[in-house]
Structures are given as structure tokens and as C-alpha cells.
Image 1 (tube, rainbow, N blue to C red):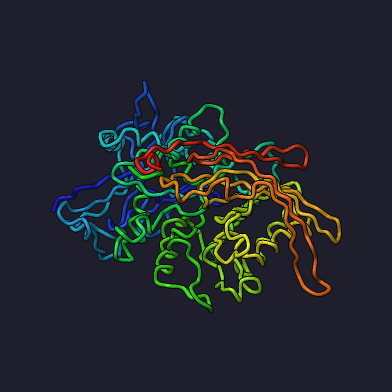
Image 2 (image 1 turned 30 degrees about the vertical axis):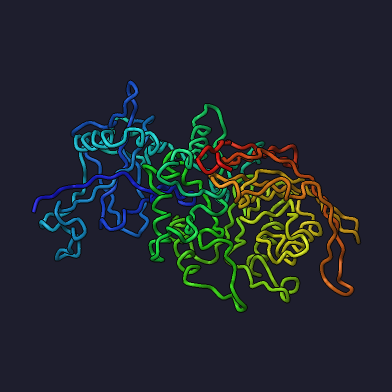
Length: 546
């Protein structure tokens, strides 16, 4: 049986590990073991060319399915970039049963030939030609920067064997390594939520927000966002509300992610692969089912919840080294500290009897981690807290019956407790980012402890939807208390304390979809933030008719 090598560009499984300062790759599912390589490229007269000679050989890296493997960049001149390619040596008529173990335990092809250990520059040039024929634009998005990862390139580039700098990380360096870095003067974060899936007729409109973000990244001189924070509803497992959704749960929680991650036609297809290493996500209800919360006492879950959570870990938290301790996420870099709260999966059961006394929007362990994160960070660091659920402003609807509200306001014990904590602990330079309700706004908040007289100011920014084609599902200015003042108490008996919260809200870009962009500027030890929207006006048959 003859060997028929299959060359493929990576899908979503190429990730820059900032801690290890190295690229990691994973083989595609169902294709068995792979041989991976970074092809050094240069652009000449507007066309990509392989940056090594035909007779030069570069070593492959063995990559197994389901396992992250470090993939070094080797060879090429100092100013080259690299394109990751994976080779699957499959018999042409039997792609799923390619390998068997040889006598020494090393995989070999069904034909009995051992997998290749090196690849020549001549073969890489042929591979590049095939990639160009399939999708030349994809190459532009998939190349990664940086010099070779090795000090001595060997035969790949003997003329460039002089000392080379370590890899240029496409994301900020880990502050734990080396001496403390000075605080930046300015930071940028992109954030958004609610990417309704594309149908047969609206794919271009559905992915417009990500194309706008990609266009922003291409602008000369712009600051690349530190992170792209996706705050829930990255997929809709119930997109047709049960009418046309897959009946099998495995399909319901697999197919939306395949569409999301498709590097040719999915929402992420417009973004450079190098930037995707900066994406951080948390789930909201549509990763499970609309407005999911426990359906009975004792944290009752369901098969749909279990499948949805498993799919989230598999598809949205595939990064190397991720442990399944909790859905919430912490991260820090010079000048900022991030806590992505999980306000969906840890909710407790609510009823008329339990709402005020025992219902929480997040579990006790997560709450303590959030409080520790906010109090341990130094006062001059920007503290970013994200949650899929909107913190402020409050909603007019169900004002007197919060049992029916899906946001923080619907969990008064958690809502008031967080505001009181911020005030009493005097947490400086904190900003909240949220999603879910499809309306961009910024709330300036002041909390005052009426007993001690202490007060605190902070900001709560809210993102528009990335794509929300149905206007009836969007929040409106008329339902939000844009200018609000309310009082609440925490504790009981002698420990009871009274607070007053004042809110002034401005709409950022009403009626448009898009990705939000927060810019934070530092003056001394004080951070100020503003939000702009890389807006997209949605015009679909549904929106035009409403």
C-alpha cells in the first residue's frame, strides 16, 4: 500500500503557552499521529516563499492526538515568520487505521515504512504551493512571528548561527519570571458576548464583528489588546429553541463548536491565529440551555447541563496545563489582574422562600477567590472582573420580584454582598465587564457605607452582542435604570450595615452589534477606562422586519 501524506494547517489546536514561552500543537481528531513542523517563510514581491534551500532538511516533531506537544521554530533568516503544518501519513483508502506499533513500540505505517523524521526544503515548497491553491489568505492569518527557538540552527541556516534572541512572545511575558516590570501607561482589552450562529443566508452578517476586530488589529500603530475576553454565549446549543436543534445531545453540544472553531468559515476565521492565544472565555446560559439555573433544591443538574459543561471544557478551555478546578479563571500580567467570574454554573436553586436567604449567583469558594484576588492585588494595579451577568445598571422589569431576573440583581445576597465588600475593603482601580443583554453601556457607580461614611467609585462596562439578529431578544434603554439611587443592608442584628449605591449610566452605542474595546489609561496610581464599540449594523430579514 503506497503512502499518501496528508498535509494540513492546524485548526484551533495551536496555542502559545506564555509560561513556557513556547508554541504547543495538537493533532486533529480522528487522523491519528502526526508529524508537525514550523515552515520558515518570507514574503517576496507580495508572495510567500519558503525561507530555506531545497537541500536543507528540518526535523519533524511527533504529535499525538489529544496531547499538547511543544513545537520549536527552526531555520530561516532572522526576519522570517513561521507557518505550522502537520503531516499525516495515511494510506489513501483507509485514513482512520493508519498506524500500528512496530516491534520496538514505534508507530509505523500500514505499509511497514517508518514515519519520516525530517523534511526537505523542496518538499516544503510543494506543500506551500498546495496550501496557496486551497486558501492563500489563510496563510496570512496563520503565520506566527519570532526568530528561531534554537541558539544554533545547524544545517538549516549556518550563516545565521550567531546568537539569536529567545522567542518573541505574542503575548505579555509572565511577571513571575525575572525582575518586576514597570507599570504600563495604557492597556487595551477587547470583550464581547453572544455570537448567534450563522444560517444559510446571513453568514457574512453573523461574522461581521470578528471581521471588524480583525480590521482593527491590522491598523498600523494600534495597541494589540492584552486579551479578547468572551463572556458567554460563544455558541447557542438551542439556537432554534428546539425546533431544528439536533435531537442527539452529542450533536447538540458538538456541532456549534465545530462551526465556531472552523478556520475557513467560522467566526474566528478572520482573526490571526497568533491572536487567538489571547482569547479567554467563560460560559453563560446558551452553552447549556436558555436561562439555565438549578431546577430544584440540592443543586439539581441535568444531562444537558453535564453535556454542555463537558463541551465547554473540551472546546473552550483546551489550552495546555488547564485543570478543571472551577470554571472561573484568574490571570495577571504587569499592570493588571483579571478575574473571570462564573455566574452561571454555580448558581443555587431559587424559590420565593430561598431567594433572599440562601440563593447565590456563585459558590462560596469562588466568592472567596474573587475577594482574595481583589484584596491581594496592589492598589495601583488595574483589577478587571468579568461576569456574563450584568452587574449594573439595574433593570426596571421585575424590580419588586427579582426571582425572575437572570442577572446579579436577581440574587440580592450576592449582589449586595459584592457591593458592600468593595466599599468596606476600599478596592481601588476595579472595573467590571459583562455581557448577555445585547446593549453597550457604561455605568459610573458610587457605593457609600452610611454607618462609616466611607465610599468607593468604580465602573461597570457592558458589551453589545457580537451578533444578535432578533431585536426582541435585546435589552432596551427604557428597561434600564440609567440614573439610579438605591439603598440596601447586609448582615443582621448588631452586624447590620446600611449602604447607598448611586449609578449614572451612558449608552455607548445603542442599537449596534460589535466587539467592545476598553482602553485603560494610568495617571500616577489611578486608572481610568473608556469603552468604544467596533460596531456593526446588522441588516437581516429579521431585523429589517422588526
